[in-house]
Length: 252
Image (tube, rainbow, N blue to C red; front, side):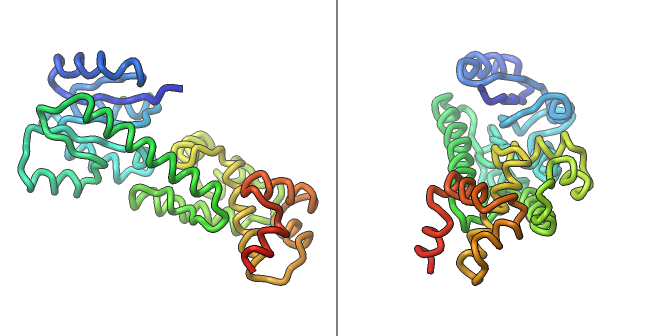
């Protein structure tokens, strides 16, 4: 599926040029100022924003600051475009949480390379988290808001890890958020469903117990909500590429 990109600029000609250049690779949505862009975020699921700095109503700095401090939207990357080439404007862009800062006039190929790198780096972090037994869930965070969210989410899952019926409905109640909002946030940060993330968290906890305790494998399986040692072993192998006994021997 194509990523959906929000282009924000008060110059209609630039919006048209960028839309034409990017539409083959991405789905494009446009806005002419920060306030209009923020209203669009409430209606459309966006994966990245490319935003001008100098705009009426709400400029790019203010828009970026609001987005990066809002848990609903803080996860997606924001690239700021600006005619200001001063060091102070660069510092301000970084201070409000921009993921990249490109000066006008710019080369479209340069912009697309930045976009590709941001998406690729996030995908690598997701893969590392999912495939490494010891990778911390906070490794997928890109802002302080995301880090706090993931830390709380991890604590809630671990506190209820022996409940084999723990799912997105129970998790949303424990997180005091809507089911849809939680699903969207977890998906955006990890590219996993809530149930997949719950299962991986169980398996990571299992990896820790295999190395740090003397519990038998069947004991660990039941402690972590698996209904049998067989299903636990199968899940562990599928996720990390080795059997629990093999992992235990390797790490010890």
